[in-house]
Image 1 (cartoon, rainbow, N blue to C red):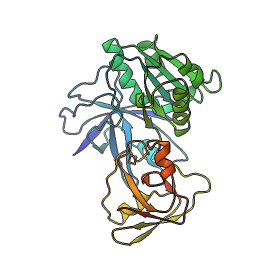
Image 2: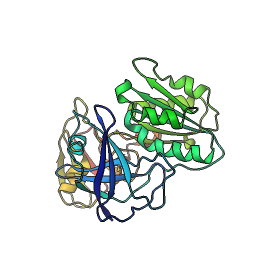
Image 3: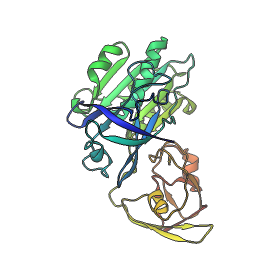
Image 4: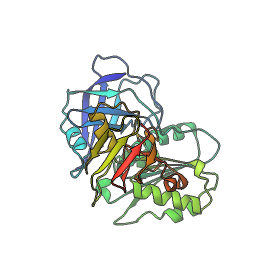
Length: 315
Ligand code: FES
């Protein structure tokens, strides 16, 4: 089901981050959501982009407004730039809220760890944890002051839990963070791939179980220097498609009208996981285990590519 959402307020959080407030175009209440949820916004000519729903008060069952934040990526594929073109009163089409990054309740202390604009899903989690009196820490790291969003309101609402780190002033030490953490902590991380990988390693080194680490990657499929094209063969039909640099396997197969199941398109939800019959995947997800990666038998086709000229996929 899709929603028609009208922009009823726009705020520029800083030079790159724009905050959009969205209501139902027909004036009705919107579907409720839980902390960690996102909507997929349809952008003409580009596709869909996921944006976490931000709430500074406990999320409601039937809210009348959604809040999202969009960081403009000048070197990206155009989605964020298009989102910055929307104006007050424009209508956009989006999915109903989905949640692949659910906050689970337990007696264990919670660590929220955000990198840059990856703070957005964690804000709603912090709101709920604060309201329920749960024990939590909120660590927020960015390159510089301009990469930190919502600083004032977060300082006000979570003065006891919030620690902000700026790479150019007081960089985050993941080892220091996790070495002082309770080993039973439940950790929620949202940020770029490098931070997620380093945080998982530091958490594991300090005795935190992998089962207690939940992640959401804040990036779309990134083109990396040296990316080349490769072929994908569909095992069921024998058809072969060329995946050029800058496009994902999903981009190419969808353009060929092949039905696929996927969601995040960032490599963290696991929904697009596909069996590999032959060829070697170049894994770029954050959802597979080390053993699964090493096996080469499965891959996330939304972000991962190939190390061999052709992949044969069980599709
Ligand atoms: S769609 Fe989420 S991992 Fe590929």
